Amino acid sequence: MSLLSVHELTAFYGDFQALFGVTLDVEPGEVVAIIGANGAGKSTFLRSVVGLCASAAKAALFDGRPIGGRPTHEIVTLGIALVPEGRRIFPSLTVEENLLIGGHRGRPGPWSLARVYDLFPMLYERRAMSGPALSGGQQQMLAIGRALMANPRLLLLDEVSLGLAPIVVDDVYTRLPTIVGEGTTTLFVEQDVGRALSVCHRVYCFQEGRIALAGSPRDLTRAQIAAAYFGV
Amino acid sequence: MDWMNAVIQGVLLGGLYALFAAGLSLVFGIMRVVNLAHGDFIILAAFLSVVVVGVTGLGPFLSLVIVVPLMGGLGYAVQRGLLARTLDRGVLPPLLVTFGLSVIIQNLLLQIFSADDRRLDAGGISTASIGIAGQLAIGWFPVVVFVVGMLAIAGLQILFTRTSLGRAFRATADDQETVRLMGIDNRHTYGLAVAIAFGIVALAGVCLGIRTTFSPDIGPGRLLVAFETVVIGGLGSLWGTLMGGVILGIAHTIGAKLDPAYRELTGHLVFLLVLLARPQGLFAKPVRET
Image (cartoon, rainbow over all chains, first blue to last red; front, side):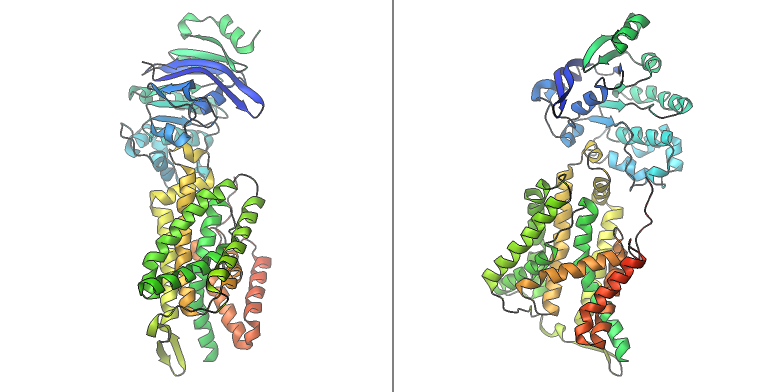
């Protein structure tokens, strides 16, 4: 059974429709990428999964249970964590408090403060600093660590490379295998197509609120992806 | 010696003012809502204590065992049932709703208890005093209130910095969308914050009622004191709130010493001076650039 099964999901911002019937599955243990141009609905899709955008009750199943339309804090407690676009570190909290609040629900699992500090040693050195005092890359690692503290079964990452220097992005991506190695299924949105294809098992390409292409990176040609990405 | 006495009385009065202000500051700090009915809830709590004392025969201090949870529950209900519906709709709706609550509470109290002055009788402690030297004597009760105020502030400080609930409060104040991604129900968090604020309001109301007479219409005056205390001390600083209360308390007792009619005026002048010189308050944390 799929860990996440989304069927004909639609999403609106007021009168503006952002998603037009998106159907997508994520199997346990998979790393799945979502690529697509700006405004294709990638972030909206992740926000809908965690209930920050309204969706129909049957539109999303998590581990077989309908989660559409449920409040965000309930969905998150079932074992989905989102690293939001723009990182959204809590400015009033120290680095360590930001991590601790990620584990607020106390879900059991492999991740603890010590394990997150092992993964990101620079966070341990800066644990007493306030969130905004960190560099963009460090904040991104903090946001990922905060999500891991929830011990999610499904980790959603939204544009982790946005606004970061390439060397920092490398640093973030080299840690992805460790995260997946702990059995955390990962679904991530990435604008950098090359990077997305290099780490994922399967990729979905969004275009104007619809899925234009789906498959394993091995089976897709550059031309197919370019066509799905730009809609030419 | 008289002046010394006025200063000491002012410092002790500051404890009561800090109790007035702590709840207001807590609600504003977390939800950015100014509760215009804050003073009336203080008076409501005092009347609740009158009822509890009348029904159970407990003293006013012991009545807190019932009044604090009752007010806390009321706070939670007011937040979830009423204030929550006004959030995210701009600054005006919460102001209008709490202003309406203020009018309703005053008139309900007037209807039920009449306009008579009341007082909570705590027995000997309200008049007992400690002689210091010569003519200088400190009342026991003001000392008790000051200690209660300090403990309330210290308790809030510990709650905010050391507990996971306090962490959730601060995170909710920062970003109420992202906090939901942490599995926290921000509406429940808001409810708990207001419940705690109302618990302190209950303390404030009972202390006020033992110290002085009260009637249904004096709530707005207490709101003003609470407001000036918070602004003098600086928003977001709990110890600043205690210091703000002390400064305003000294201003009131010194003013009253000059001429009883100057009591409020001196307080307002000090408030305005602080507002001119340091609009962010005397003890506010430096504003962070984001």
